[in-house]
Length: 442
Ligand SMILES: Cc1ncc(COP(=O)(O)O)c(C=O)c1O
Image (tube, protein in one colour):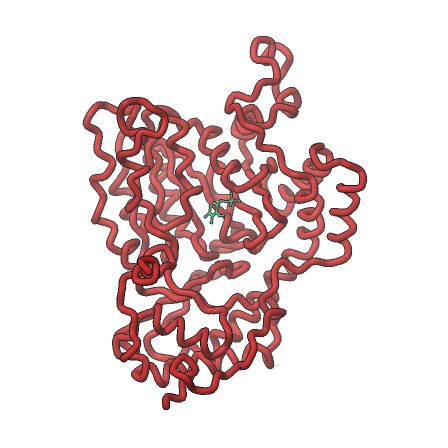
């Protein structure tokens, strides 16, 4: 019988160590803060949200922060606020969560997908530049899976072509690129603060900018009770306080109260995660065929390590797929490893063919000249398409406790050393969006 737990052998860890992964870390101050909001019935106000925004803006080193009920709303408001509208194109990497770009369709704009750098999984600047057309209004830059996107190249291309830059910082709050905080490069940044993210306050999102007009437009889009704060009576004379987007994007104040407390400990928590993750990597990095994705530039980091992925080369493991390797790892230690990334969005017809709003033609091109084909890039995003089959996710350690991390290192080394034994059970079906297609069929 094989030594590997996946094949009936004895696992390295009998029971998963949940406390090593539990997230978010809740303290008494958070418990008290959220109870106070409930007990005073102040869930739908804006006083706590405004205090949270002020503290967040100062932490984020931006003039303005505007809280939202989730990251999707914050991103959609950012797209409207920079002026994305009918007939415009927004360039975005295909390998991201749909909320990074789908909101463009509701504004009458189309999304053009570009490819990623296969080594970092971040936007490939050359692929971005190659897709610029006279219709390109904006680029959505996602700091994907905690890693900073190459902002020097992206900003220089965008400025040269007069393109607005929106950063999606949902995966990398508190992260840095060459010494500067993510979310401070573009015209505006927006992010999710939902409970699985590294800045986790429950459902919630934040928009940050230095641009007063972007801030005002984001308020007018979905914050009816704050329009009078930033627009004069004359400006509001005809429109009153009706939000232009017809949306109510206000943050739940329990989330805001938790956020105020999270800000006090966030930097310390992600610093500990960073130490823990680096300890794990020190223990496995010499294994041939795997590579941590960590920024090489001075002053860049992977703050929070949210959903971190590493490169897995199956050729170094006798052809064993990332899915099978992942199963074998989890069998050794009760879970924590994952495979694949997001589904590449250019594989969804929503961005090309679907008539969402009944225009009688595809929504994505409803305001573009007849015959416009945004699908022209389809099939030409090889790195995005390959990413799901060549990546694995390492466990997300929240505590720098070496004795408790060591078994995961041991499990990794054991599976790597015995990978050949997995060949008879190897699952070689392609992977999409973190799902092995063979399993989805079952
Ligand atoms: C990259 C990215 N952008 C945006 C969002 C949307 O944020 P929310 O779920 O808070 O609406 C998510 C996921 O949650 C995400 O992963």
